Length: 329
Image 1 (cartoon, helix red, strand yellow):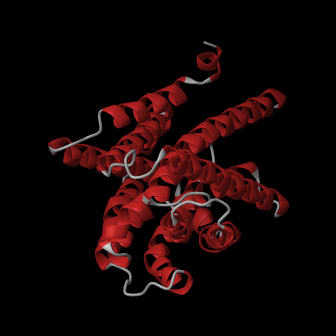
Image 2: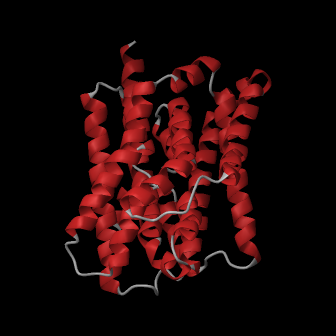
Image 3: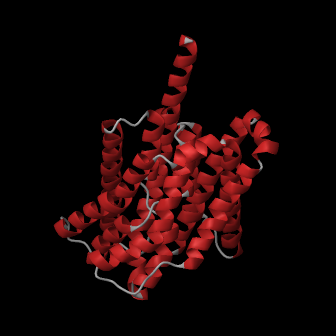
C-alpha cells in the first residue's frame, strides 16, 4: 500500500498501460486504429505547441546552438562510444546478437514526440526541444546508417525520403499550422493550459501502449530466456542512468538553466523505436532482426517509464520554484 501512496496517478496509469499492452496488445484491425489514434494525438500535441509558443520563443529555441550541439553529441557521440565499449567488454556470456543489438541501439537517433512531451510535462524549454529532437531524428536517418557501416561494418542503407516526409508531415506541419493559427486560438490555448497538459500525458500513454503492443506481437517474451532478458533490462537501466547523469552534469557544468537542463536530459537520453525497427529491416538479415531489435524494444519501454517519473519530479521542482518566486514578489 505504501508503494501506491508514493506513486502519483500518472505513474500508476503508466504502469497499468504497460500491463494492459502486455496482456491485451493491439492486434488485427486494432493495430491500425491505435497507430492512427497515436498519430492523431501526436499531431494534436504539436499543433497545440505551435499555437502556444510565441514567435520570439521559437526563434530563441532554434538559435540555442550550445544546447543543440550537446544533444547531438549525446545522441551520436556519447551513446555510440558507450555502445562500442560495452560490446568490446562483453562481461556476460550471452548471445553475441544481444551485444550487437545494444551497439545498434546506441547508434540510433533520438525520439521526437516523447522527448518533447516529457520536456513540456517537466516544464522545460519546449521550443528548443522541438528543434533539437526533430533535428536529431532527421539527421539520424542519414547519420545512423553511416555509423552502422563504420562501427558494425554493415553497408547498403541510406536515408529514406519517405521517412523524412513522414516526419515532416506528422510533426512539422501540425506545429507550423498551430503557430499560424495562434492569432485566432492563442488566447483560448492560454486559458486552457491544464487541458493542453492532458494532451502531453495522453500522447505518452498512447505511445507506450502502441510500442509495447508491437513488442509483444514480436514475441518479446519468447525470444530469450529469463536470464538474458534480465541482463538486457539491467544493462538498459545502467546505460540510461549513465547517459542521464552525464547529461545533467554537462548541463550544470556548462551553466545551462533548469529549463534547458530539462530539455537536454529528455532530448539527449532517448532512442527511437520508430526509426530503429524499419532501419534494422534494411540493414540486417531478416533472420537476425528480431534479436537485434530486442534491446531496443526493452530500452524504449524503460526510457519511457523512467523518464515519465523523472518528468513528474522535474515538474514538481519547477512548480515549487515558481511558487517561491511568486511569494517573494
